[in-house]
Amino acid sequence: MKNIEIIGCGMAKAGKVVSNDDLSKIVETNDEWISTRTGIRNRRFCTEDEDAYTLAFDAADNAIEDAGIDKADIGCLICATISGEYITPSMACVIQKRLGLREDIPVLDVNAACSGFIYAIEVARGLLNGNGEKYGLVIGCEQLSKLLDMTDRSTCVLFGDGAGAAIVKLTEGGLYESFLGARGGYEITVEGAGPVRSKISMEGQEVFKFATFAIPKCVNALFEKSKLTIEDVDQIVCHQANERIIDHCVRKMKADPSKFYKNMDKYGNTSAASVPMALCELKQMGKVQAGSKVMLVGFGGGLTWAGVLLRLGDRS
Ligand code: UT7
Image (cartoon, rainbow, N blue to C red; front, side, top):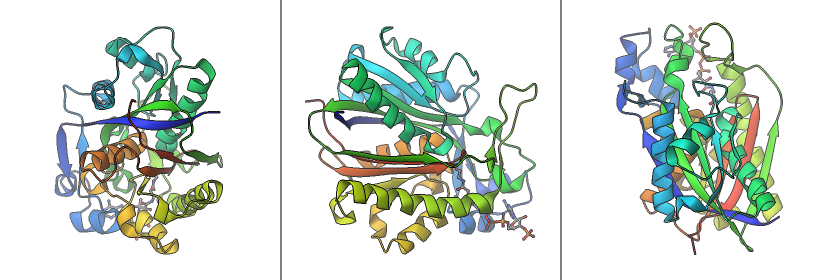
């Protein structure tokens, strides 16, 4: 199997900023509880003119531009999401058509909840190795605002809408390790294909415990496989569910906190979109660039976990 590297990133923020104070007018909560328990201060919800598909399109378009490639050279499209309007057509198929991508390429959605983008990176690697194409488009996109039960203060304050995307390139040499798994469980649920619009429900403390197990497990497994150490890696981009989860793991691993970027204060938990959005911001800030070694780590519904260690590159 050849390795892949990420050569372009894009993101799309939903238009409506919703603060903790805004939510305290809807449910019995307050800024102090939300920010100290989670690190979240604002999240963004789609406006009336936006939805998961417009966000996914914009993020993908930005990633193609950032990579500097011709969209006719894209050889697969995978979209990680749990919040598409349809079970079929997949969100990926809708975006394929809107972007005007080729028809002779594999196009599919991946559902691994908050680990979804990283699962999708792994799927893209497999597909590109199979079909011999050079570039793949991977999107993580969620419109979780429409899945929120605004009477449940233990979940509705946590989530937001957003999208992130990456262009991956099949490379000779390079670096790629992955560590994916799942446990099976109903700790986070969104019912599907039922007559009633379903809502997110979550056993917060169980998921917290799982998250603080999953992040170090992924990080340590990837270091073991690659024979690299934390000093060799530029950034470890974790799923942005809760600041306390990341801080706990940093302490547990005795790691340098500056290598663990956090942006949940601005966007809340955007599930499959959180890792590519964070990666995109890191690239825009110049904290990572072509040549950087980056670890991406996710955990969430399923219960799933996923980590990949790879290099950022360019289209050459
Ligand atoms: O992306 C998927 C991955 N998801 C996660 O990683 C989430 C992991 N879990 C968590 O981040 C935390 O468990 C939460 C942030 C969801 C909850 O924090 P917690 O410290 O586990 O709180 P808790 O559920 O134990 O609730 C403590 C108290 C309860 O009140 P009592 O029973 O002690 O009187 C809750 O009713 O806090 C209350 N509470 C709230 N109070 C104000 C729950 N939600 C709120 C709220 N505002 N929004």
